[in-house]
Image 1: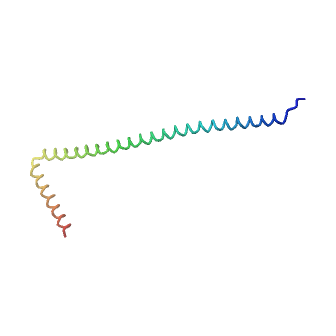
Image 2: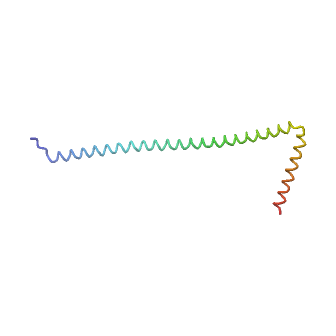
Length: 109
């Protein structure tokens, strides 16, 4: 029969605990590295998202301008193709001016 000194058993338990603590410390360091990496990736993705969002707003504005230009060209073409286009345009402008004057008078009263 082999006898083990009580001191040897204590050292063995301490070694096991030390290995356990070291293992936990290692895993915590790995998790911290992963966390920091994920935080950086998240910040990059947020920045990319903001850039794409900004580009979308710019493209929507550009689309609106193109739609407005198309409408203006369509109106100009329809007036140009009309035999009475210039006269009709003048009459319409006169009507709009009269309507604007009426609105101004209402606001002033």
